[in-house]
Image (cartoon, rainbow, N blue to C red):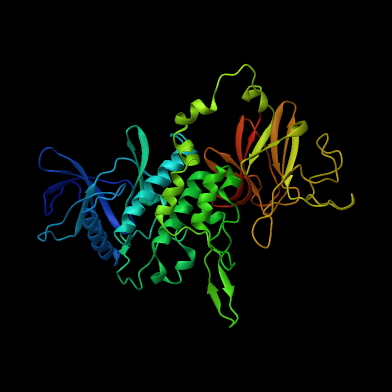
Length: 463
């Protein structure tokens, strides 16, 4: 039954429901409403879902926590306004209306500027400040993820606000049996022991979010697999995907996890690395260092970096001319208008085929054989393995046009077209396809799984 147009009574006022939010929560129904008293103010009203048994329990918990936060008003946390009067048939929570989009939607919004390093620092500081204030109240969020952060504009800058405390808790509470977090973002090693969940789990989840917005890579695609003693760790630091080195080190300190060790009595025990960050205060301290300030406020450092001089290096465009790819944050030149990308190896004799039937001596006017790929994809994981075949992708120029081809790999590759990944392999035969690179900039991927999951992404530039 639609609630649009209804007026509901809270303890402090009445609210007319205007519209439903486009994105509804799994545990609650969320609406935009306005106060009936003047001046009219827009608010958010959240009802429990009648079709989910634990929904009301979580809404009661969220109300309790947001009421607690009223006393100290933590930074960058959605504000409590009101709750349902006892005369109302349904329980509801009234909160401030944050006009913006969640961080997950903002990260992939092609109509807005890309989240740059300065914005990563600002968003990270916003949430770290929120966590620091919450943890001082002995409260933990337990479900940090991009969808639970709303990006709003303040003083002509984007900032992040933390929302959705449905599974938040006080550290003094016994919440045995509660579900904790979202698998892609929360502490992997604590799912087995929910009572272990503490402040450091919020810090860990924030680190994974920072990894995502700093690199564009989903953390679940860049971690050791289930069953590995390093499960929950990343096999590559954020710097490998182009992130600032200091920021990458900070993220690593937030999400590092040493896994398990076997004791002398034959019992497998969890161990923590000595450098792992436990508190939001540690994160804020690092985000206050000069390197972070320089990223967040480059204008303050401009005078130090850009000084007039009588002689200088060649202009940037001269230094960066020529076809190239960017992979793992590194620029790789394409020499002679042709290159292959794959795994380093030793090619066999000419009478054996190491290229799945598509590479032969003299082919394409200069691809020598036998040979290693021009650009190597490093091994990942422990023990090391590769998502790339020995000869995985070829890029070349012919009669003024650039082309790309998957070299018949079963790990597949893909090209980004109209914001969707399109496989460079025929689905039926698995043979590689040749496609024209008709844009100056094209996004490609090695290791493609149907449904849009990619392993290693890189960018091709004609100039």
